[in-house]
Image (cartoon, rainbow, N blue to C red; front, side, top):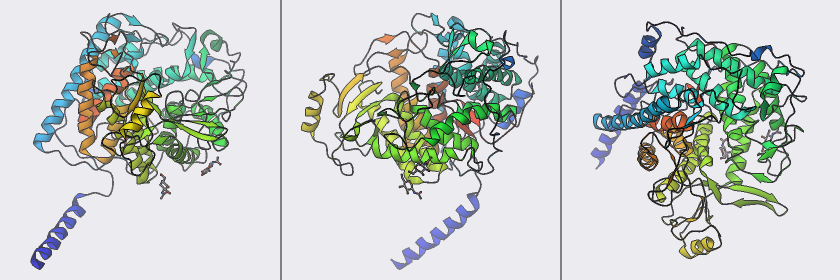
Length: 599
Ligand SMILES: *[C@@H]1O[C@H](CO)[C@@H](O)[C@H](O)[C@H]1NC(C)=O
Ligand SMILES: *[C@@H]1O[C@H](CO)[C@@H](O)[C@H](O)[C@H]1NC(C)=O
C-alpha cells in the first residue's frame, strides 16, 4: 500500500509540473481543430480583407440625422472612459476535443448551419430587404420601420458561419438602406437600438467594414434624436417627422423599464468606435436615474416593471420581474461593466447596480420548483410587493431564461463563483422545462409549485395535484410539476439556448453542450416548414399547429447560439466580446475600429 501511495504522489508531482508549463497565466485560446472557413480567425479575416472587388460605399440616407437642431441638447459629459486594461478571465480554458468528439461536434455545427442556410435562402428569395419573412405563406412583413430588420440582424451570423459571399451581398444591400424614411410614423427606440444599431455595430466589429460604421452612425443619430426632450430622458417611440424638426419630443408618462434601460451597450460602443462621447453621455444620464433610486423602491435593489421617464420616477410600482418588460434593463448592468469597467467614476455604478440587483433577485424571485425527480434547479418567478410584503408568484416565461447565463457572466466578472452556481441552476431549470414537454420545447409562459423546503425538496404528488386544480388554466395533460402552460406557444425564442451557451463557455461542462444538441433537435423538428421555421402554437402537444411568423431573432440569436455551442470556443470568445440583448457581439476593450480593417 505505501508504495502505491508513493507512486501516487510521484504521479501527482509530474502532473503538477506538466500543468505548470502547459497552463498559461494569461488567457490563451485553444483551437481544438483546424481553422475552417466557418470561423473567424486572423488568417480568414486577412484573406477576406485582401479580397479583390470594388469597395462598397454607403449611400447617404435621405435625411441627415446629425443635422437636427436640438431644442434640448443632451449634456456632452461624462466622457467615454478609457479602454479597460484588465478583466478577469471569463471563459473556461478549453482543451482539444478528442478526434471522435470533434467529429460529433462538427456534424452538429453543420446541421445548425444547414437550418440557417434554408431560412436565409427563403428570406432572400421571398422577403429581401423586408423586415421579416412569413415562413409558411412566403409573404413578408415590415414591423420595424422597413429597414430590412432580418437582413441587418443576420449580418454577424453570416460572418460567423463563414458565409462570406452572402455577407458581402448583404453589406452591399445595407449600404442602400434609407434611414431617412420609415414605414411607420413612430419608430420604436428599443427595437431599433437592439436590432439595427446592435446588428450594424457587431457586423462592423467583426469585419471592419466602413459601410457598416457609417450606417451605424446614421441609426445612432436617429436614436440620439429621441433624447431631444425637456429632461433628457429618451422617448419610447420617436415621432419620425417631428424628430427631424428638432423642436423637442414628449417623453411618455409610463413605459416598461427595459425600454430606457437597454441603450447603454449600443450607445457606449458607438462612442468608443467614433471617439464621440455624446452617445455615452446621453445614456449615462438615464442610468444615473436608475442608479440613484435603486434602493428606494418597494423591492430595494430592483425597479418596478413600469417606470415614468417623464417624471424620472423609477420607484413607484409594486410588480417586479426579470422577465419580459424588464429583462434587458438588468441584463445590461453586468454587460455594461464588462464593456466600460469600473475605474471611471461615471461607469463605476454598473458594478454596484449589478451586484445589488443579483442579490435581490436571488432572494425574492428565484425558487426551487417541486419536480418528480427532485432535481436541484432554479426557476425565476415574479414578485409583487403588497401591504403584507413581497410575495413570490411562481410564474415564469421563456424570456426570463437569459438570467442563468447572465448570473454566470456576472460571477466571472465579479469573481464570485456563487453567482456562477446560481446561474447553472437557473440554466438547468429552463433545460428542465424544455425536456419535460412532449415537443422538447418549453412554453412561452407557465406555472410551477414552489418547494416548501428550498434546500431539501421532496416530490409530493398530492401537493402538485392540489396546486394544479386551483389553477383555472390547468390542463390535465401537462407534465408533472407544471400547474399551467398559460401561454403554450414557442415563437422561436433564444433565451434558453443563450444561457446554455454561456454556461458551456464559462464552465466547460460537457453536459451543457449535450443539452444544446437536444434542444436544437427538438426546435428544428417542431418548427420546420417547407420554406424556413415557424412559431408553434402549443408545445404541450405533438404536431402542434404553426403560425406564419418568424421573427428576425431566429437567425440573429437562436441559430447563432446553437451554432456557437458546437463551434470552436474561441469563435466569439466571451473574453473578447460582450453580446447585446439581440446576440450581437460588441468587441471589448478596443477603442478604435477592429484590429484588422480596410474598406
Ligand atoms: C444600494 O444598496 C447596496 C447594498 O445592498 C449598496 O451596495 C449600494 O451602494 C446601494 N446603492 C446606492 C445608490 O446607494
Ligand atoms: C458572493 O455572492 C454571494 C451572493 O450570491 C454573497 O453572499 C457573498 O458574500 C459573495 N462573496 C464575495 C466574496 O463577495
